[in-house]
Each structure stands twice: as C-alpha cells, then as structure tokens.
Amino acid sequence: MDSFVKNFYKGFLAALASIMLFTACTTPEPTENPGSDKKAVIGFSMATLKEDRWLQDRDIFIAKAKQAGFDVIVKNANNDSQLQYEQVCDMIEKGIDILVIAPHDSTDAARAVNVAKKAGIPVVSYDRLVRDANVDVYVSFDNVKVGRIEAEELVKEVPQGGYIILAGAKNDNNSQMFYAGYMSVLSRPEVRKNVKIVAETWVEDWRREEAFDFVSQILKDNAENVQGIIAGNDSLAWGAIDAISVARLTGKIKVVGHDADLAACQRIVEGTQLSTVYKPIRNLVEETLNICKTLLEKKPVQHGYTINDGTYDVPYIMIDVVSVTKDNIDDTVIKDGFHLREDVYRGIKE
Image 1 (spheres, one colour):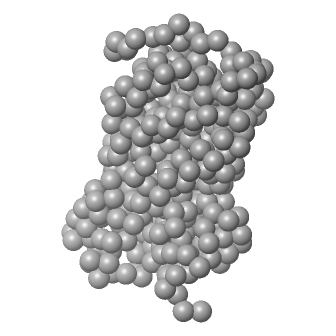
Image 2: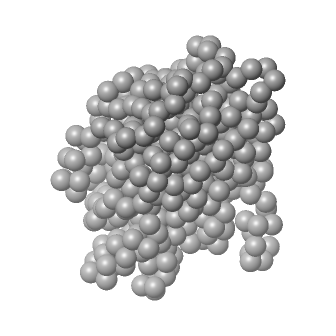
Image 3: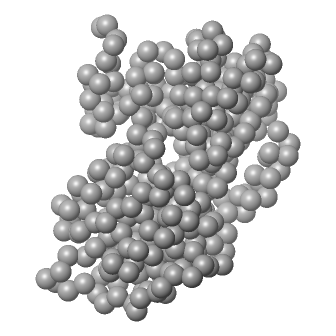
C-alpha cells in the first residue's frame, strides 16, 4: 500500500488542495460566432461507450442538446487516446463551434484541447478533467465525495477486516479524486486501527476482466483476510462480484461501487452488491449545455469552485451525488426516473 499511496499523493494532493507536446494536426482559422440563423454545433468527444453509464450520457446529451437548439457531432474513441485526438481534429475541421470532451487519458487529451484553442474553439471538460490544458470549464460531480460515500458505506457495514481497492484507470483524473475520497475515510484513526488494505491496484481502461483476475488471485491466496471491496465503478464491482461468486464466497464479502448502472442496481436489490453512488447524468448534461451557451455568448461563467489541472486553476461546476442502497433505491434512482422499477426488480419476487 505504501508505494501505491506515495505515488498517488505525489500526483494528486496538490491539485486536491486547490479545489475552492503536441503532434501535428491541421488547425483551421478561428471560427466566427454562430449567427442567429445557424445552429451552433457541439463536438462531443467521448472516451468510451463500454459502460452503461456512458451510453446514458450520450443519449441524454443528444436529446437535450437538440431541445436546446444545438446540433451535435458525437465521437467515441473506444479508449484510444490517439483516436480521440484524431477525432477531435476531424470535428474541428468540420466546423464545430464548441468542444465538449470526456478524455480517455487526462494528460494526453491536452493535445486535442490545444488544437481547439488554436482554432478559437471553447472547450468544456466533461466529467473527467483534462490536465495541464486550461480548459474553459470543468463540469463534473463531486468526485471526492463519490469515493468518500463508497468508503463510508463499506465501513458502516464492515467496520473491521481486510479490504481490496480497485482504483480504476490511473490515466483518468477521476480515479485520483475517488481515491482521495476513499482515503479520507480509511485514514481516520478510528478506521485505521480496525481496517487493513489487503491489496489495491489501478485497473487499466476500467476493464472488468482485469478486476475479476486481480480479485480472483487475491481470494485464491488470501480469501480469509478479505471482508470488503471498494470498486472504482460499478463495472469493476461486477468483476469483483463475479470473482467472489466463482470462489463460492457470495454474501461473505461486501462490495461497493458507483455510477448506479442498471446491473448494479439489480445486484443491490438481489443482495450481491452493498451500494452504489447515483450521479445524476441529466444534471451533468444540463449544466454542460448551459455552459456551452454561456461560452458561445462570450459571457463570464458563474462557478462556485475551481480545480487545479496541474498547471492552471480551472472553473469547476460541481454536481452533488447520493449514496444508493437497498433501503433507498426506490427513492433515488427509480424516483428520479434514471431506471424503471420493473427493470431494477426484474427477477425479484415481491
């Protein structure tokens, strides 16, 4: 754990405390302000559509952008940084008016931001922060709180024992923020004396199979010392739960995740996953579209927080999140219309 935490703190804590290179690409001339008779075009560059949550982002974004009078070009980089860069260049050449980017690699994506800025195109960092890029605005959730909620739910249920941490993709800045949230709980003196971190790892590209393999190996060697698992999202939680099932330990090891994916909500009501964190995507999309309108009108962005991207202090629009357990699932994700009740409780006899 020591080297893991040491590397984490080197790369992240300075940025956390502040919260209150380029390959060739043809750069077009700066775009003119969209006229009143022309719809502004948003280029939405997405890192992935692998997880259920990102499919929701895409669909909600397209629908709400059209309602707001925007045209949208959406590109999926399939967890490939170079492809994401090329796709952004292509969208810029096609004449987008504003770029919204959810980066695959928080550092490498600065290349794409630089090209957009040279073209006079405003850039919104969507959910994931682009580092060292000075984007115009970062719109995301309270990601430190996401991690804190996960850890608090697990400590509440399993106040004593060994934990595994599946910390997500190291090249995603959100993983660093989630981890800061976990450690804000696990480093409390009353928790440290009762909870031991048995093993932890970053999971490249958020691969569920990698989470499965890592947890499987730990359970093979050290199952009796594992009582809880903190997962960097619900997909990694799924991989961990599958590993627990294969090891015939279902119900004996508690698992927490976040994103409120449908499969995770189903696991919660079935009892195989302890909790998730609901991050209201509609709110994220609506805030992003409001920011797009503000930037295109060249008005100042109203914001309550800033975040340091490693070099610059960036305006941060922070959206609240809520813990979801078996006890409140009806009053959170279902009540909010994020998932239908019949889908969540499918297979459950009531």
